Length: 56
Image 1 (cartoon, rainbow, N blue to C red):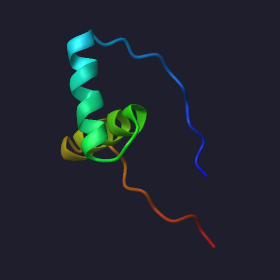
Image 2: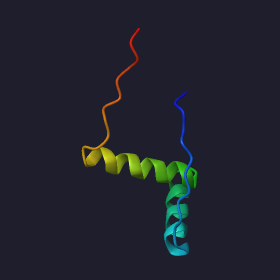
Image 3: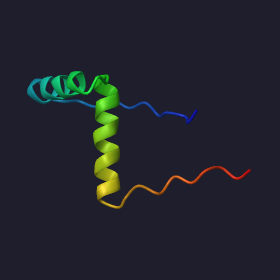
Image 4: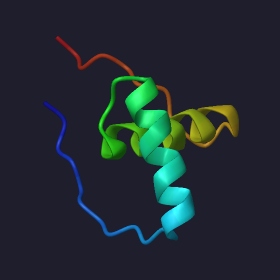
């Protein structure tokens, strides 16, 4: 499993509540939803390197 790097993210209560509702709608945790949104934004912007399978 890929290593995860923890970090603190401060959000205003309104933004957090909206993220929490969205996460519940998608059956994800708030953390999982935030990661999903960030990853999609990075892919759309062309800033996320392609994942290549490890060499065998």
